[in-house]
Image 1 (cartoon, rainbow, N blue to C red):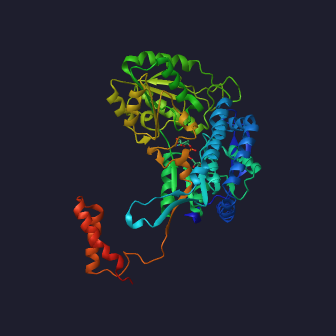
Image 2 (cartoon, rainbow, N blue to C red):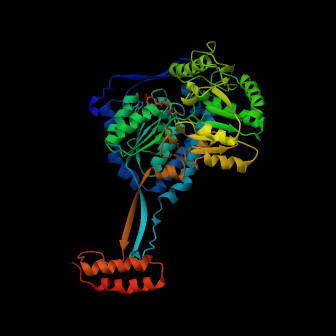
Image 3 (cartoon, rainbow, N blue to C red):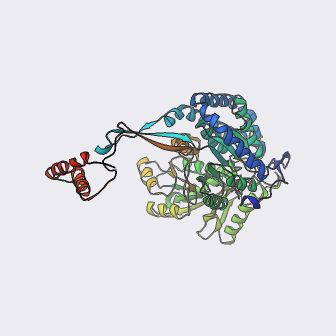
Length: 522
Ligand code: NDP
């Protein structure tokens, strides 16, 4: 309950995960600040919607130009706060957002255009129906630290262009990246009341759910997602939940081992494995298994772990000591249960307190934590399989269903397997990059969440469909009162006219029901 929340007194501290340097100390938003931000957004939103799509798109274009001009500066802010290499900050954060803006600019018109709903039923022939799509009002966004710019940005841009106001609560670990997003949007012309960033810990997020927002987009862990869903259900707040994953990669017997092993290493280690779409389980056909493991081991040993601002760095630090302990616990658990750590499997204290060596692990089994709990760290477990049917079963043996990938020289075979996998997205001969394609809907099944962001489906989540039905004749309708025996017979004949199989019955039905047109109505 909102009244139980006590969040006004604290401060959050943004730290550089590579060095421990304090980047900024920030006062937490209290419950009343969150409520006020939503009230201001609500008051301003109708004006933003009335501004019109043309003007909102102009603002989006300015934002895009501003971000493009400051791409290196923004990437550096993200790298300092989230630890990822500069190249990743540029590509998976800045570039993803520039392209998301392009997609919205190109597609918002067609999404928001009124859509005719033609009627096939003869009784509705004098009506014209159409769908209009209206903004929900105030959208709440709660975002995680692993993509501190691109996740809140893609959702915020879609909400704004469709005419909503936004109150954004970013992770306490990465507030500066979210403030950078807001700064660029304000400079482009978004009024401050239309986008507010409320900074604080999880309780600020909880306060946002209790406030008068109209819809919530939450991205984060399954545990928090369940709490969010419960709180939202109490007040029937619509939610989109983008939660965790345990994504599997399949390497079929005809795959190119060199290509597949490069993919596995990148897919598991990118952003130090802290990606919802990371490869967390890699199933390889037995005939390629030894060669594949050896190739991965060689490639992992070549990765340069270090500070994200060094241009040679491939893998940065983990976001927090807590995240590092999760990875460490999973590796220790697997070791104790007989797993074989081929490469890595330890901290790298010489680099800093939050660095963990990219790790390749084999001889893993179903009972180990790393096989069913999300790891979110630089860890690649490789498991052999014997045939495609077994591989599909292994992939689907998970409560998560975010994404999966299949590597094969036979695309058709890969596409056939894709249809059998329980996942919101399946990539053939690639992985992770579906998140960077603004046209592709993003979201999962099962414990991975509810609803979609990105693409037209993601844009549709930002608007409320309204059906408008307009009758050409302002006359009393046949089906209005009074009823009575004759009317019931006429209606029965009318059903015959519409759905009887034989032409004779249809004809008789139409003659018998015609009398209903002239009956006296109330
Ligand atoms: P958390 O669930 O810990 O936090 C997510 C956000 O929720 C943060 O802003 C957090 O604030 C906030 N929060 C915490 N408690 C509450 C609460 N009771 N009510 C409302 N908001 C709350 O996730 P992480 O930040 O650790 O992110 C990692 C997780 O996100 C992983 O599981 C990952 O798979 C998932 N994820 C999913 C994606 C997807 O698209 N499916 C994409 C990216 C990540 P604070 O940080 O201040 O505590």
